[in-house]
Amino acid sequence: MMEGVTMLRQLIGQLQEVLELYGSPPPTVPSNYFIQFQPQPQPPQPSSEQLLPPLRWCYFNLEGSSLQDSCYNIIMTAGKSENLKMLEPGKPPPTKKARKGRGKTTLTTTSNSDNNMEQQIWQEFPQDLFEAVIARLPIAAFFRFRSVCRTWNSLLSSQSFSIQCSRVKQSQPWFYTITHENVNTGAMYDPSSNKWHHPTVPALPTKQIVLPVASAGGLICFLDIGHRSFYVCNPLTRSFKELPPRSVKVWSRVAVGMTKSATSGYKILWVGCDGEYEVYDSEKDTWTRPGNIPGNIKIPLSINFRSQVVSVGKTVYLMRSDPEGILSYDMEDGVWGQDVIPVPPHVTDQVLAEGGGGRVVMVGLVTKNAATCVCIWELQRMTMLWKEVDRMPNVWCLEFYGKHVRMNCLGNKGLLMLSLRSRQMNRLVTYDLESGEWLKVPGCVLPRGRKRQWIACGTAFHPCLTALA
Image (tube, rainbow, N blue to C red; front, side, top):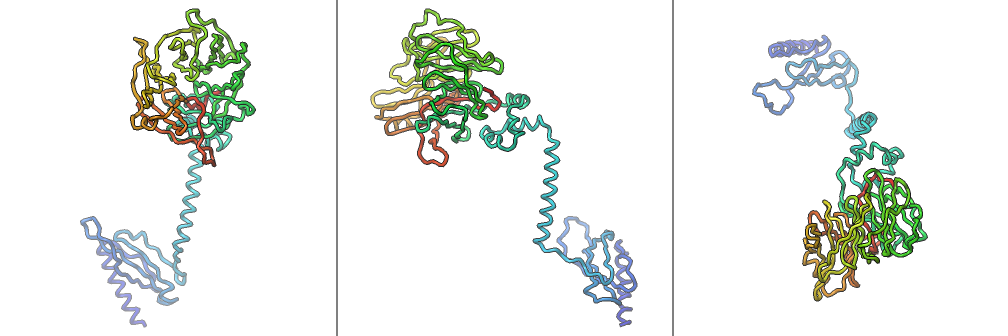
């Protein structure tokens, strides 16, 4: 035994000389220990210098416990002897944790640190930057946004958030429609996501039918089917207001136009065929009659009620049939105007629309023999005549061949939604007046329902989260 110990100590001395020669002396070892090393496999190094292989050091207590109980490993790279560690004699080596347990511990630690980090970030996140980010979310996301917490819900009515929303480019108009099957509930179509939404406006009366007739600044104006009561609502935020009774009692059908004021308010015009009209100012909360219709405008007005009133800036435009042309009214100055413009031949179901950039366009059906097509005309300001600028693709028009088709325009603010119906067909299409793109609209189906709904009427509106009724 003593001879073996002597030989091992000689071997240790030789090893120390070798390591000192290469610049990596071994640690000091007690006399009752000996050291063993063996090269460990190592992938080739990219460096051109030849490095020593790492050494596996094992310290054995020659006088105490067994060799296995007192063995430990040291991975030692040449020149880095500070990584050495030593176990006390008789102390068992550290045991490896199971792979599954190690993963859980690491994951839990990382998750906790991430949660703490997220809380610190959001606590110090600037409020104005937060509002700027929220204002740029897709409009459809705000249906879920409002239900997160009271703080987020109250954000929609804050002045600073309103300023952030005003800096965001106006999105495509949405369409608020009423279906034949559910006249007391609305359906909104979002063209950007090509989806229908079914909002509820609790304040709208349920015992009578109310129809959307105009819109401006994110607000929609409703009129009951008896033409008695007006309501204004933001369908996204459910901001609601019932307008005061009109001073002039008119029970016949009226045309309604709406514009946004230079400030944060809005104005609403109603006009009947006999020339009676009034204007509502939201800032004054009253109906007024600024003046009389000029004598050069023929009474009765013969208003085309199939066509919605178009608002361009502070002016509204109405289509009339006798004589054929357009009536205009300036909401700020209170001035009426009239232009006699004949409708192109073979045109039916014609309606006015806003083409963007102050343009006024007309949409109608052109029928010759058994062929029917949807055409678009733009009003030429110099000649005051209609000029055809586009028409529906011929492939789509073939579906109308030999059928008695009726058209209804559900929106007239840069993006048109047209309802084309016959006994055998019910189609919804959109037309972008800027790009000239025609698209088919998916059928409107109620939640948890399968039956396709027939659209009765509707209006286009630009969604605005901060518009207040």
